[in-house]
Amino acid sequence: MKALCAVDGSKFSMRAVEALGTLFHQSLRDVVLVHVIDTSLLESGLKKEGTKTGKAKKILIALEAEGKKILKAAEAHANQVLNSKTGKALVKIRLVLAKGHAAHAIVKEAEKREPHLVVLGSRGFHDIQGYFMGSVSRKVLSHAPCPVFIVKDPIQTPVEVVLAVDGSTASMRAANYMKSWISPDVVSVQVLSAVPQAQRGLGASVRAKPYTKALTAAFQKQAREATAQVRSLLLKKKFDVTSEVVSGNPRETILDCLVNHDAGLAVLGAKGLTGPERFQMGSVSEWVAAYSGCSILVVRPNIKRFVV
Image (cartoon, rainbow, N blue to C red; front, side, top):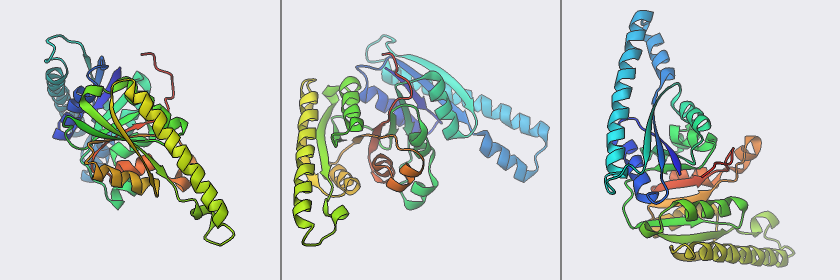
């Protein structure tokens, strides 16, 4: 497995490196550490200050030198976390110094280097402004060509994981990804399926009640089948698994489940909505990523098929 991890010298990006070692130690073989010099912020700041070209170049050179130091420190930490336990360099670590807008540069590097996973540390701001304005992690989550792992807090073992499923291709992709990449010895998994309220689309009239009842029963059956299928899949790989089916709005139900189970990680599949459809329908995975207090792994459709 190959991961691309963004680092900026903060404790949040170091947590991301540590989380890689905790959850993916059985499959991780290649890590690309990327530090981005955000030239968009630099250029706007220098323009406001009226800085001359010569001085601007000196500032950029200083930032490049600092970026290399950050990468070297991240490399040392990654080696300690990922390779020191075995005494062998099982995980190959590469360093990349990129320039540009932070989110765009990370996505561009992911498109170029084709990792199985993009990893970011997040400061955990989950307010209304953050959701609509968009942080670096949210922008990467929206546009990355592969699954995205956003680490908000240190991952402590054993990790309580909530895996949300709905019987869709996207949720089965998430379950298969988890089965293949995450180490079963460090997690316990709660498979959750949220049954939406059928009356929302049919109204509350007397005539609609029989249809509402039948539709709700169909939703519940689909949810039970989805959780049973995923539970069986994970049990075969020796995961510690429980499951539940809960009625309610999927966004709210998932957030409630994360709190109730004191989860350290949420795993969701993304359907890959784009354009007007995505704006109108919203994304459950993006909503949970924005408002949950725990780390989140969103399994997006791959642009390319990666060779393991």
